[in-house]
Length: 152
Image: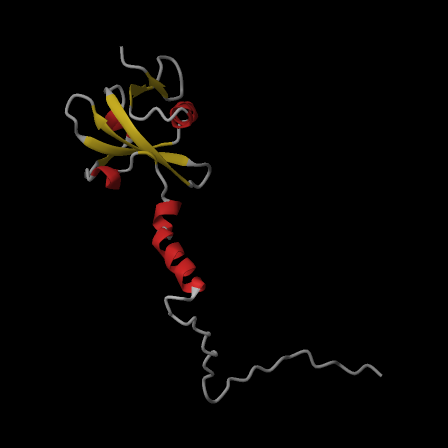
């Protein structure tokens, strides 16, 4: 016998929506140690954006500055002071959002940078906790990469 097996599955929708069971509550008495611990944890809880958009050095929100975002070409070869950076995920590799000020005008800015040499140098600054740091982002003559040089 070559009987064909029924492989279709029928889904039924309940006629009345079901409500998930209520979660148990913890009595909120001053003598309940669980409440005290939970209250302490809640005061230490961080916003998810503080974690996913973490900054090394200073962030714009820590300084109350309102930086203007520039393309990297707009800040090349200009003396800057880097106050901090944030690592972000790119399509191909991570890149940094650099937060700084122009040394001459004190104008705050952010710029996206994915140059591996610049990133390596900023990581050294991070490891040594040396923010703020002065320098110039430039493309060395005859080279095809960006570097972060000390001011002369």
